[in-house]
Image (cartoon, rainbow, N blue to C red):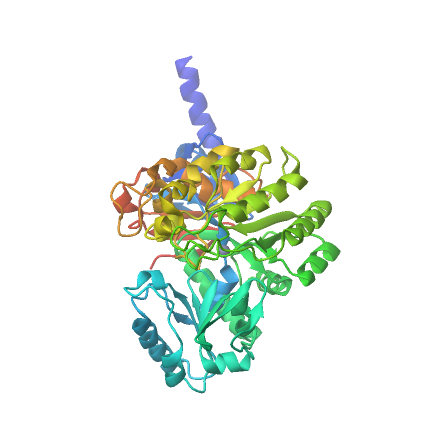
Length: 544
Ligand SMILES: [Zn+2]
């Protein structure tokens, strides 16, 4: 018996050498996290025609396959390409042509950055993004006087980190015909002593933003290329683009069909009549690179600017509970039509009242257990009584772990010590359906999925603060965090059959890392380097 086994092995090897199957890519000697249902680890992967042909041991696959490209991974770590379940890819790309106002230390700091930016961007509007007065010693909103002195003839619009507030100079306000005392639904034009301060809240931001001339197709294309390159460098192979116009989705489709845009995009169209008309008339759009079958609706604003709609007043502003951005009736009618047409609804909801409103409307149309995968984006502050509505109706909370570690400095002030326990409650939310997609909300946060992993698992920020983690009872295990960034994100996009794990028949979207993220200490997570990124078996990024 022993001899028989010995000879048959030799025989098999001889046969297989002569009849090795040719594939596009064979990668071996790796530690491959397949993120399949049993979270199994493999060593080698054969890829042909963009898809995984087989995954297994180095011995088996090197005997069976010969690649046009053969890669010895030398023991490095392979993960499925990361999927960001909530981002603003298009906006991020365009934003690369705007002044970066993230992590400013003061209003003075903003003005200095803008001065520098204006020297290299000499014409037209000056657009900036990312400021957060909560980061400053003086935490009041700034006013526009010095912008008016510095830029009397160039319109300026500087958007807050969450996009729900902005400051404009007089030139921009004039172009948009904004006047003091103006009232509008779902927004505020701020005045002090009857004078415009330049601060615009929620829908008031759009009054000015809509006056900004649009970029040319060539400019947009270049910006998106830059954006995807940055994303590949951090291991992203699919991004959910939350709330774009159908023409933007079609533009990305055209770039993908030309082979210029290789990033896979799950696009949610924003809540606008044109988008509903287009998609209902043309039906869902599905290619290997683009999936359009959902709508993004906004329930309320953000917590930082106190635009989130709360059940009880803000703990640091007793006369104020925020507000819904549209009427209940609007959300209900949108849910009704989306339900009838069989599309997915994804609603931004931050405050506990915003979330309750949407949960109840969803429940009315989903009617208990279902597989519609309607999502609540952020699901940031949930009243204790409302958590079970997620599980009862299979509503998917789509959360961004870095929001917890960015907001932790002031979330307790806004919400008070009791209410804040129901905020950023990722574990509790995950338990509702047994799975949860994770994202970043970039460019609101950094694009790095490693920061998402760090915040989800260790509940600390990039500086490692706070020691021991913030509200750690809601930390996810490393395995669940990885699932949230891969297979569960794919599932929230109805794409778990084609990506999100490294299994036979799926797209070969994967990354090679120099360290093993799953077994990493908190301090090593952000020191993990993406050595290469592959989409459909094609190398789209490699570390120089
Ligand atoms: Zn967002």
